Amino acid sequence: METKKVLLITIIVIFLIVLGLIAYLYFGKEKPDPIATQCAFACESGQKTSFCLVERTLTSNLKATCDELSKNSQYSQYNVAPCSAISCVVSAQEAARAADQTCITGLGGIWESPIGEGTCPQTGEELVNKLTPSDNPPIAGQICCG
Image (cartoon, rainbow, N blue to C red):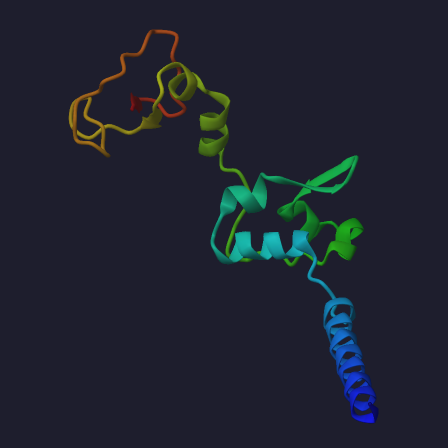
């Protein structure tokens, strides 16, 4: 009878030690900031759109991009590091391409500078999508390749 009590007490003590160790490992570690982790991953993997344009939800009424979080001192508590590998400055060509969605939405393609006469550089085939006089490529002479 005495041996059973000692064995039971030993099992309970071991169980409490294991439980305490699990609680320490789970609650004692500082969890990484998901916003900072997401932004670091976008930077390291060269995901310009994700770093520069995707808005992260910070609070129920506050959203910001990784680029904004890394540059604005008001967001320093989110610990987002600047990304020297990615430039979020929009060139005039990119801005013009974003403004004119005719090729993308209307014709299902992208504006490209042709090779040869009306030949798309990616496929080497002739232009499939026909443009109307109202279509306005961002750079003169470009064609809509799809």
